[in-house]
Image (tube, rainbow, N blue to C red; front, side, top):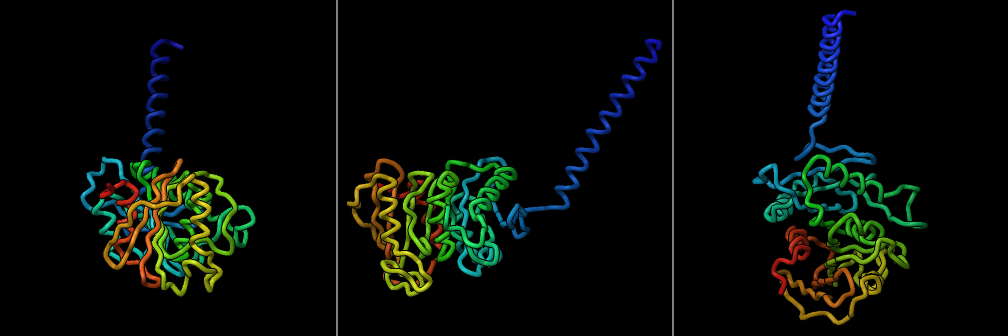
Amino acid sequence: MTAAGTMAGQVAGSIRFLFILIALAVSAGLARAEAPCGGTVRCAVAGGYYLAQPPPDWDRVSALPVGVYYHGWNGSPEGTFRNRAMLNGVHARGAMFVAPYARGGYWRQIGPGRAEGGLDDLAFPRAVLADLKRRWPVDATRVLAAGFSRGASMVWNLACYGGDLFTAFAPIAGGFWNQTPDDCPTGPVRLRHIHGLSDRVVAYDAVGIYNSMPIPEGFDLLFRLDGCSRKPGEARTYPRGLVCEEFRHCAAGGLELCLHPGGHSIPAEWVADGYDWMVGAGRE
């Protein structure tokens, strides 16, 4: 083959390679266009979906803190997103709001001998967070797991069996179901729990009507896990009769227990308050 022929072959090969790259780029672009995600558009992952919305003033470059909210029994991400006060409170902190969907409308237990119906509800949160980090620049040092009622049960389960996934945990009006674990394999955690002393759905200091475990049992486990002194700091009082005691003298992690005289409820601001506790805002 002549030098000219060799050169022509090389040029043709380069052109074919360039066309392949262009085709791949176009294909990837079309795939993204066919599957938008964010806001009220569902983000599909293995095991379900989630909704996610960055704060409206996000610059599309800065790393995003995240607040993940696990809805209560028969709730939904769409229903959660209609609670604009909850979203706005998290957005005001500069954080992305994320709401995953529980299969069948409720979260299941996690851990050996505890999983219900053979469904592993630890794999799904891992898939959600992995997908979230693929789509957005997540600040992995500020990721909160919050939840209400059965969603709070999920948060307690995640604190025990998925403690590596989140920076801190903020369950509200829900704890372990059926039994309190003997140990938590992922180690010490930071957890702030809120509960009503008149809660008739998930009792605070007794077995509840749906076989929820007493919250003090869960704290006994975390006291051992974190190596905490049981003597709290000075109590702080907040609106709605909320009184919080923080346990700072811990070998690792950190705990806060907040009680109020009410029942089974979740004022919208309590999720953002959990974020403030995570980052230490307003703490002496």
